[in-house]
Structure formats: structure tokens, C-alpha cells
Length: 93
Image 1 (tube, rainbow, N blue to C red):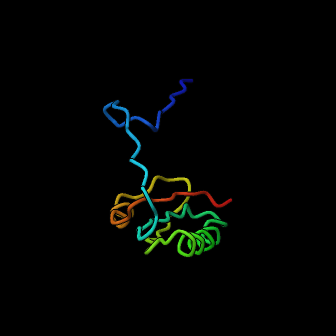
Image 2 (cartoon, rainbow, N blue to C red):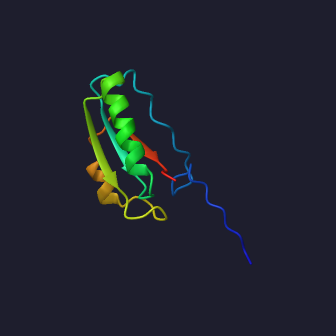
Image 3 (cartoon, helix red, strand yellow):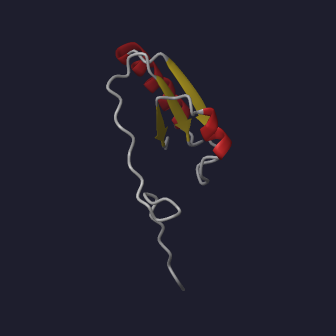
């Protein structure tokens, strides 16, 4: 049996990906909330959205839900979130 380990930090061509620069502020920002379809994620994001809106001035949220937690995000779903300044992807177990 062969064990193959994939490194999610590498692009298909083997070039390392660089993290995006941090936002200087959340005030007036548009944030994406990507739900992984597990039981507790929606409730957690409801709470997170309230805090980020009230205490940090986030202007708008783009919320989307993956079909299920075991698969990658469909490209169309990511395209729908492309207007966000940043995206939070979380697990809700």
C-alpha cells in the first residue's frame, strides 16, 4: 500500500502560496462567512456576525454554505464570495 500526502499550502505546480495581507481594520469591511455544513456552524456564525457588526463595524456579510463538510468548496460558491474583503471558514462541531 502506498500512502500519498498532499500539502494544501502548495499550488498544483508546486509553488508555495502566500497568505493575503491582513486587513488594517474591519470597520466598513465586507466579510464572507463560509459554513462547512456541520451542525453548530450556522449558530456560531450568527453569534460571530453580531459581534463583528456591533464591536468592529463590519458593514456587510456574504454567507454561504458548502454542500457538505467532506468536499472542497465548489468554484461557483467561492465566486459568489469574491466581493468579500476577507473570508472566515470554520468548523461547527
